Length: 193
Image 1: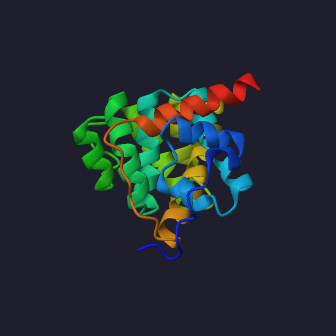
Image 2: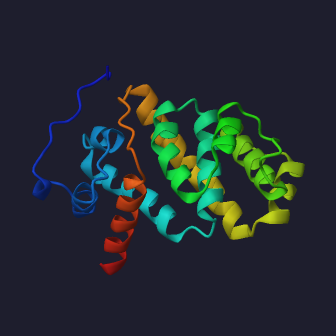
């Protein structure tokens, strides 16, 4: 049960354009619906998520491993449920998803680059600073741009996690990667404007 009612579904024409695109693409999931209490902010949150899907230089597998890592750190069941099918679609294995859910950051199912990404993402999610050895390890495998993208992504998913956990947003897990595809649709529409 949510702590506040979901906003009523409004005609798409009443939504900011970005949210109209998201709704048309089938990506107006419960966490974004809850944010409709503040439509302009919801639109910007959706835009930031979409551009991360479309423009990040992380591989899709690394992006999803990092998202599932911070989701676990944030105790965000909603986020994990949404990204389970997305991560599966891009190639994250069942063994890797299980290791992340169990916080087995050093599991042999991850290569050394992924282990550094996981330790870095977990550190960003758990503390205001990152130990030097963790920072240097991730920079061995990832570019400065990718390191910055990981920090931004961790912050973005903290926002999503807390909207979902604090407001007790009901999970509406997709059976596929429709939310990812909807994000790409939004990013493409933004780029055309």
